[in-house]
Length: 184
Image 1: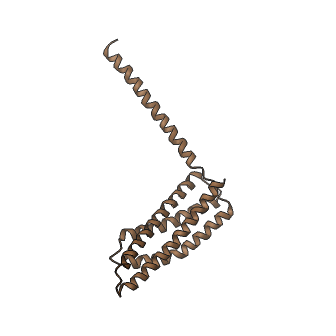
Image 2 (image 1 turned 90 degrees about the vertical axis):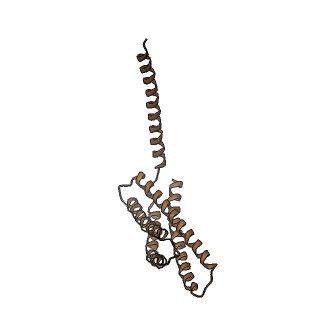
Image 3 (image 1 turned 120 degrees about the vertical axis):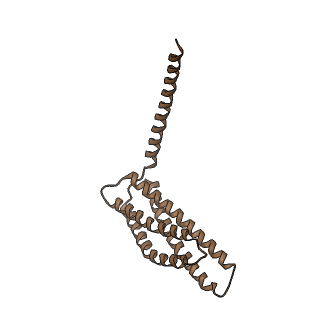
């Protein structure tokens, strides 16, 4: 046995081991992905509840956007936070519409429903972060009570109220999705 055959034998066994480990990891990732996608189709009553929540969200969204634009013109607020809140509002409504359409139609896709629900969870998290930011700004402004600040604080409180209502609707939508999927 020469040195070249010895190296190639060890190299082959090492490459076979790495290939087998890679295949095992790939199989494991596919199995875990499929298990995570077990998302049942909603019953009609829950789809109707989601539609009612979406209608409430769409009715509240214009008021919330007006409040956000008023606040965005203020120097104190971070414009990126306001844009993130606006994006989360529009994306959450769009994702919820897609989810409702999919549940009403004949072509229900578990994987797509799982991704849409996950997207809704992320948007809800973003909206809660935006609400926390608004609350922190309100608290900071309340420390400096000036005569001109009272009107500004009223606008901030309106924004917080609208944002809280919108977040509550989003949480209720997620609760409808989670309750349905845990029961079945």
